[in-house]
Image (cartoon, rainbow, N blue to C red):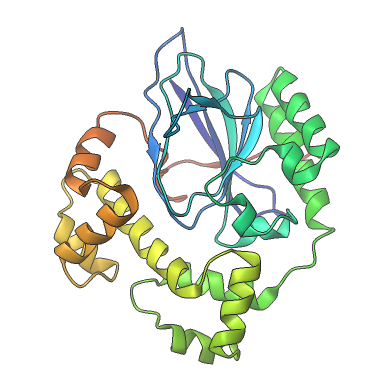
Length: 282
């Protein structure tokens, strides 16, 4: 399987962490991952067969050619595929709201299509990316579209700052200290988070702690669960295990054993390897 990662153009860099993707080679079967709840928002553009996801009742559901994952309260299981080809945009914490008008509660644990997010313009983008012959063309189309949407946004700077602080230090940042730092009362902050993200600051901090602990364990097979849990703010290993079971309905040991035997979307640090700038000519 071919994998790639790019840094976004300068105008998108404050809001987009990276643009990355996978492409299967020679009909290989790819065991796609079970995606866990977290603070992320990821926009996928498929130029081969879109993801199929397992649902609790009925036949598997096929995602749109372009869609968003905003996973918050339950895992999302992707089914294996032998025709993988996608480009994904990984947004920084809270920054998806710079580009879409849809509130977080309406995106949560669904897979809204580009058309759902942006109407006919989103649908046109999805098909143009799917039909492009070169990766460089796909990158230019996606980044141009996002740059245009960004210029129309009316951002909530206070919310964005609070989200960045919660994601940056979920282990130690108390909500009362956060409100002091940004100069906003707790109830006002909670209302802004509910309106934009669809969750409370406490829920976001909890998901950030969970996400960072799981990522540390996924990227380092020799990492000890206790050490990772303590590093990101859990009281002890039992605290992390209880939280994991609440969100995933199985033990972290079982999940990690199965997840490490397949692919995962836990990309390494931006600085851990060579990442080049995406084509900048828009």
